[in-house]
Image 1 (cartoon, helix red, strand yellow):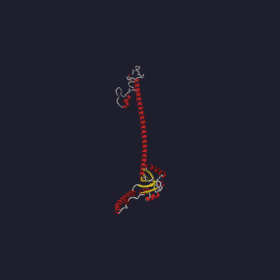
Image 2: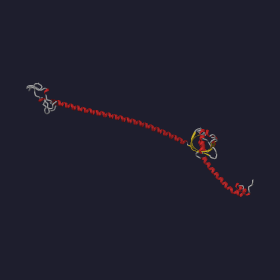
Image 3: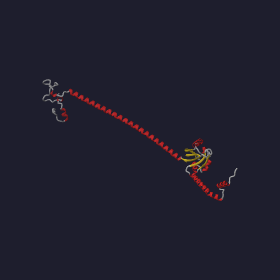
Image 4: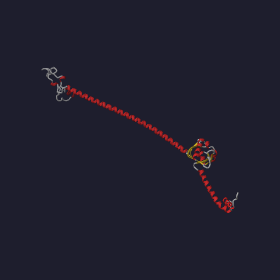
Length: 289
């Protein structure tokens, strides 16, 4: 194997910082500045990771949690992220409420889509209770089975949504009850209207019957009066009746003498009216005898 030339050895030593004192001195400031920039960038991401409002984790679907931030630890009821790492080695049994079936469905989705966004599920807390969360999961392309997740607690939103649904159900029940009351009132009103129309119809029929009876009575009275007038001539008067003989009246009785008072049969028609009423006798009426 051929040995590198002296020029090549000097170029390699310069790249590695192994050259003369002046070459090493010229490369150290650039390296120090680069390292300082990298440390600043690392601290910034570390601060975001540790002070994020939402939970952030890195986990293997088979081996459990690899890293977690304090927000996720508080969300799940643990004291610090280290306790999360030790306690959640089995994600199917200790983290996801859906168990192995849910974890297998998540893994299949990640293998097909490389991500799972807006996934709502329930996670198990340290005390055994569950919380509602919204998760965004990303499968790292360079490491098989390693997942990075971002978790938001939506328990309060779910409770508010359930409360709103209960209020909507109560409102619908009240509307249904009020609708039934209005329908009952409408039916009662229609019955009252029908009853009133029936009463008014009966009253009209009774009125018509009464008017018909009055008309019949008027016709009967008119007919009776006409018959009476036909039977009694208008020019007939008892005083004008001719006696049957020289010494008898029309009925065969003798007229009263000069010293004899007339009886009731011989009084004119207006006599008793004038006597009983106390008034004067009208034309054609005789004064009391």
